[in-house]
Image 1 (cartoon, rainbow, N blue to C red):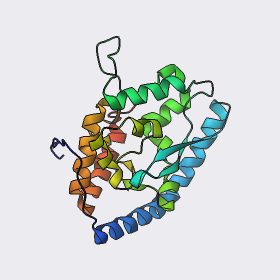
Image 2: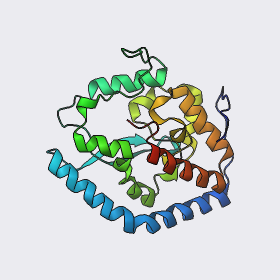
Image 3: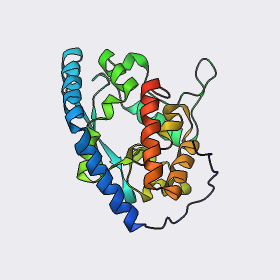
Length: 225
């Protein structure tokens, strides 16, 4: 894997038209290629959620995409309906600002969701990243790519430092360089540095490597909650 590069300030990223076209074609081809596998999986996931937890099957949320433009992201619901979102939003803003406290074991905890707030099937979906499958719709709509920085919610973007905005120069992704280096196990500044490193070195070869690393991370469960 690539060594982490320290990024201290925002940069203007050159636009590579040929790469953007090739990446878009690759996104669409991959989506249609995996649909025969993904659609039955999504049906199984939807049925399991319906049987395990009352409420909607899908979870819709506003995220901030390329150029700071908002869009609606699609996921399978994994949290109980009674969950209060206010503490979660406060945590996410503190996470971006680097103000997250240590847990009872003295370790950093970079996810606001506690195990008892996730229903049983939802926990499995998160562990295997199957809750992200509906984002194939986002990729086909063109507001996401398969590979790119994970999109943040508006309250997180409001807490960005100036150099954090560089991650908004490309389409957000279902997975990315930061996700294969730890997902919820790294602080936000480190996560953004991985995103910027990807943006400044992006290529189809790197995209394919990240796809492979993502598959390995899903199989091993590294960084999943």
